[in-house]
Image (cartoon, rainbow, N blue to C red; front, side, top):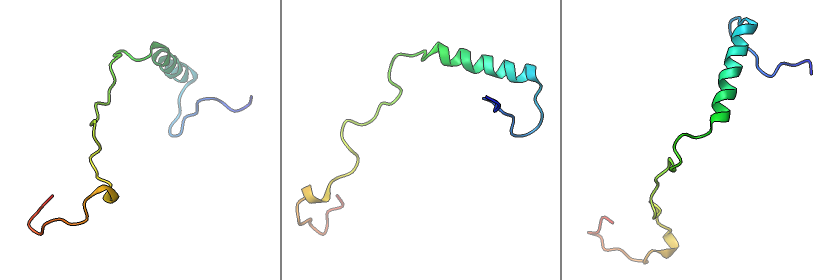
Length: 64
């Protein structure tokens, strides 16, 4: 247990500063999500097509 859980990569932090950051991180982790609705509203249908399910021929004037 000699290695600290949090370390400062650049600069010098006093023990009080590390304790303050630790307290903030623990409080945010304990709070949980504030909005119960899902954040990702993706498409119902995939945006890509599987080539093996496409018809074999497309008209030359077709852009789709």
